[in-house]
Length: 265
Image 1: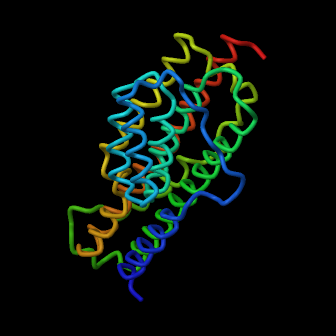
Image 2: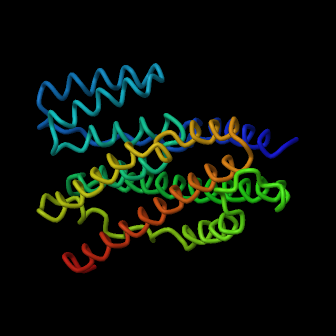
Image 3: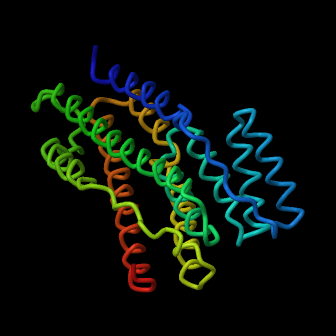
C-alpha cells in the first residue's frame, strides 16, 4: 500500500470517527430560556427538527438565525455546538461554541454542566490525537520518496521534515484544567458578555478556514497530487490544526485567569 493510499484510508477512518455521536452517557439538557423571543423559539424548533433527522448543515443554518434573533441567549449556542460536534470533523468549532455556551449560561446551573466540560475535554483529546496522526502520516509519505527523486524542486524536503517536528510540538501540553467555579463565569456581567463574544468570534473565524472547517476535503484532494505536493498539503493541514488547538487552549487559560481575578475562589 502506497503512502497516498494510506492517506485516503486515513481520511475515511478519521471521517467516520469524527462523525460518531457524543458518548451515550447521562443525557444533558440545557436550561430553558424564558426570555427567548418567539422568532428565535420557532427557529430553534426548526433546527431541532433538522437535527433529529441528522441534517446538521440545515440545523446549523437555523441555529445561526436563532442566534441573530436572540444574541444574548445560550440556547442557540448550544445548538450550534452540538450540531458541529455531530457533523464530524469540526471538533475545533464545536469546542469554541461549547465554551461560548458555558460562558453564556445564567447563574446557579446544576452540576450536569460538568457533562459539557467533559465533552470539551474529549474533543480536545481527540483533536490532539488527530494532529499527531496527520503528522505521522506526512512523515511516512515523505520517507517513501527517496531524497534524490523529488520531482518538484519547489518543495524543500528537509525544510518540510523540520517543519513536521515543529508541528508535532505545537499542541503538546495538557489542556487547561477544568474551571472549578464555572457558575461564576455565567453571571450577567460585561466580562461574561465579552467572553461569549470572544468564543463566538473564534468559532466563526474557524468556520471560514478550510483546513479546519473541511480538513478531510483538503486531505482527500492531496491524494490526487504528486507525492511532493501531497506531503506539503498534509503538512499544511497539520500545522493549521496544531496552531488552532494551541490557540483554543491558550484562550481558555486566559479567560480562567481573568475570572480568577474578577471573582477570586
